[in-house]
Amino acid sequence: MSAHTCDALVVVCMDFRFQEYIRNWTDKNLQGKTFDLVGYAGATKELETVYQQIKLSIDLHQTKQIVLMHHEDCGAYGAAGTYERHVQDLHKAQAKIKTEYPDVQVDLYYIHLDGEFEKIS
Ligand SMILES: [Zn+2]
Image 1 (tube, protein in one colour):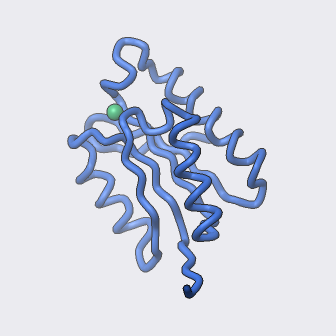
Image 2 (cartoon, rainbow, N blue to C red):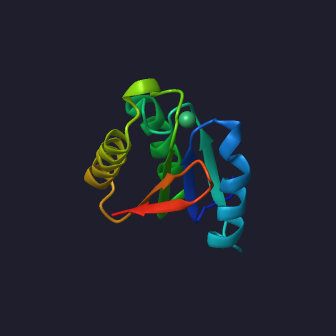
């Protein structure tokens, strides 16, 4: 079996309302790159579950950049889905990845309902 490597992994919510925004973002920001894609309700909300997918991408494809995207009005969070909660969960996922894979770049985004991507630092 030949080795195959991937530039990035993008983790998003399954929510159909955001897929076109996400496609446009990856077309522009990951142009010419290869990327794995995970779509799961709430993106990294179920962190232990989604982390297994992140781990597989890094271990199998030597992925060097992970992009985690949460979004406004996420049904997986319901009323608990405040902006602060999303930022907190994004940071939690980033910290978990960085603990095991310190050399992997982890970028965080919050997508607004109007399609604006807010980079979370
Ligand atoms: Zn969602």
